Image (cartoon, rainbow, N blue to C red; front, side, top):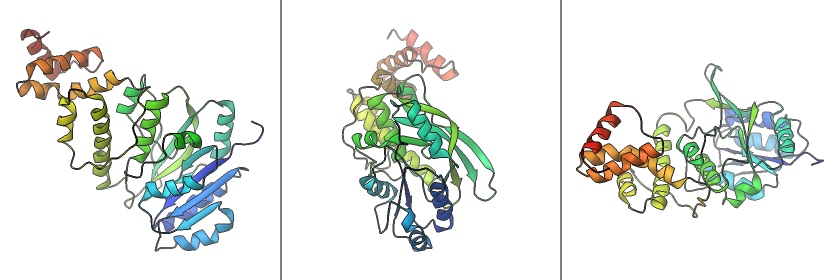
Length: 322
């Protein structure tokens, strides 16, 4: 690569005008020669439209009109994007100075990379103090990574053609579409071409108006349950776990094209869910299935030396269901 890769940054925003100018400055002041910057506003009623007009000549494209939420806004931007690498930076977050030059250097060194994971600093808006700095994690298997997702979207950049190949951002989700994209990527491509970077690339603002606060935590959790339900429906031929899990869902509105699960250790993921319900099955009188689930949890490394697990193991050994 002789020329710096084109990098597309999309900012989805709605009524975040008091933070948006800092976001815009952080992108435009990267001094990166091959930047494509797109802002998609959902029809803000604050100072946002004025800011978009102020910086319009420095933007590759922008719009301010009603949309169907954050994921829809990102998809609008993606339909216009031409960059080799892509990420979105929300209108209340901002990039670290020189982040894109560092990213471009990592891309040149790792031409086979599909996803580039840098660090994100999370800070409290009220005090400016850092709460934590973290990076997307990889574990020993795809199943383990999926089960312990530490989502770090602001510091994680994808090859744009990979995102499009996966079907883009899922607009049926309002909170965990970043998690879902990451999970779909892992299930199809695995972890080999995920490049872990040492630098901080972005800053995430924690404030009361953020979706991540208050009731938003519950909504994040509910959408994660829906994705787990989708995977169980795909993996559980017996329907025992899938049907039991569905009863926990307050609602189900997840829609997706079929996932490519070729890189997912299906038995290990299913064993995790079996491990979670083995004791309740035993207590309901389904001892044989509970013992089968217990042995599956031991085989796949989910058994723990806890009082509950050891008690169940003893009951299974005494029940002649080995």
